[in-house]
Length: 90
Image 1 (cartoon, rainbow, N blue to C red):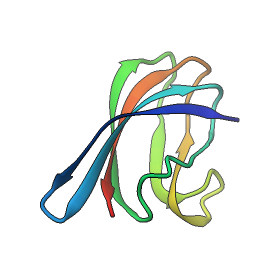
Image 2 (tube, helix red, strand yellow):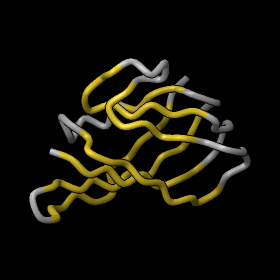
Image 3 (tube, rainbow, N blue to C red):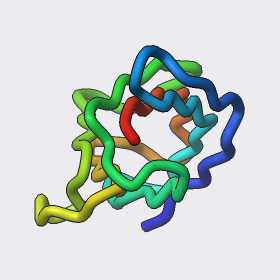
Image 4 (cartoon, rainbow, N blue to C red):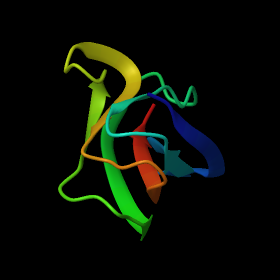
């Protein structure tokens, strides 16, 4: 399953790089490789349009929960869900 990610903004906050992405889900779970951060310290989500129930984003993990630096694992989404993802890291 794939997620379509588009970098909207990139800035610095203290000693952290901050990247904001516009994301559209193509299915229930998967992983995103944004490519702008080598290590994601934390990830937050802002909902634009959701048809799904409980969902989660996991920093530095793939869709199966295995460590993968710079990757964001996602689950609980529906096809067409649209959200903004904010990643803090370096």
